[in-house]
Length: 118
Image (cartoon, rainbow, N blue to C red; front, side):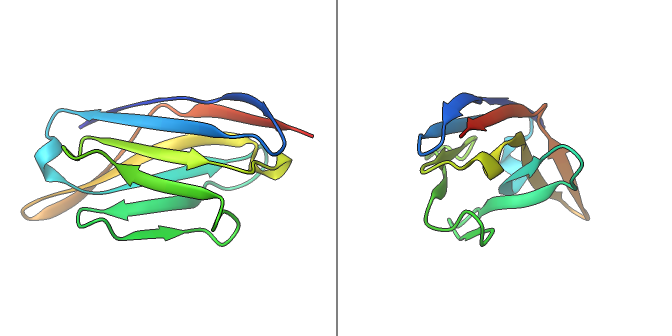
């Protein structure tokens, strides 16, 4: 599975951005997508995730502001980010978890920079 993320950029506090992540390859095996982020000097953290049946979960810090979704084909995942704050500044990474019997595998996109100015 290959993942191509896009949509990052520079935005003022209170603004919005939409990240996209397109999957290719053995997409039939993808069971869940996630968006993670890593700020300078910090560990990578889960921002939002969506399962194959549409179940979502979010980090407390982004609940009510960010929305994760996927297209009908299930090959592209989006992260709509509203009411952005300077503390949302980070490199955002797309992740896909796949299952092909008997094992799970995780794949990562290349990361896209999100910078929120105050």
